[in-house]
Length: 64
Image (cartoon, rainbow, N blue to C red; front, side, top):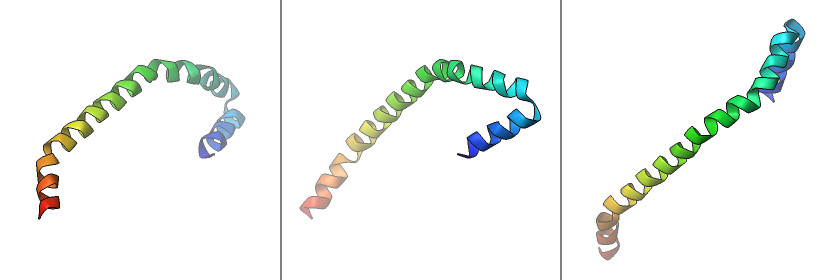
């Protein structure tokens, strides 16, 4: 909601820049999408490694 209010303020102050931002936002979002997907994949690998490395400690904790 705050982003929309800021965009409206920009539209009132300088409407050409606001329209340019409105047109460029989907293009920038599409360009950044692969980086977001890579970040999700790398985060998943780190979570898997963490679970794998802490598995013996969790298994021993349940036996005690």
